[in-house]
Image (cartoon, rainbow, N blue to C red):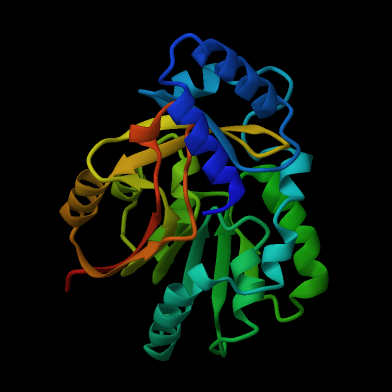
Length: 272
């Protein structure tokens, strides 16, 4: 555990002393509002809207703005340890002829660019990213230069997931105002496979927090593991694989019972 997390654990312990808790909270609020680029979290809320209303006014909400659209370019150039379960399953699915991918919250296509370094993309691959408008506009500009084969595209509607073989969600479900199950239930047809990674889930309960990413504030969904699995299963999916992302944590100062030591990944397959 690095010094950042140790410091916040120490804050939680000190906060037990009620005399200094207000001082510690004000100090953390200042750090949260002046955050230059770390992933910081603040508060626990019942709804997406309540988390949004708690955001300071000095930065925009969400990723639909130019500063946030310019983030994460480095992720297009390297593979992370958390990518390997997804790489394994994509390799299997490509070999089975699954060539249509809808990448929900795929930013500028960071996974598409990074994975082509180690995966042999099949002929006829169609990889579509669905994200907020500012991010997709930036992605389209980059693709003109970096995707000469035009396998990558950007979709303005999640409804295009109905035509996908594989729905990919890499650290995006936490930013949605609705759940993945609610989104899928509105489709006329369902993707055969769901590959989900970097998803924050609590062992029992669901709630929201507010994230500071340096360029903006984001209402941040944390689901409950039992409800998440039940909702996806109710749509006719079997769970084929599940893994932990132990390098991903969500530390919410002053709320140790709502903080997470790991994130999750899943592979679901639609029942025949």
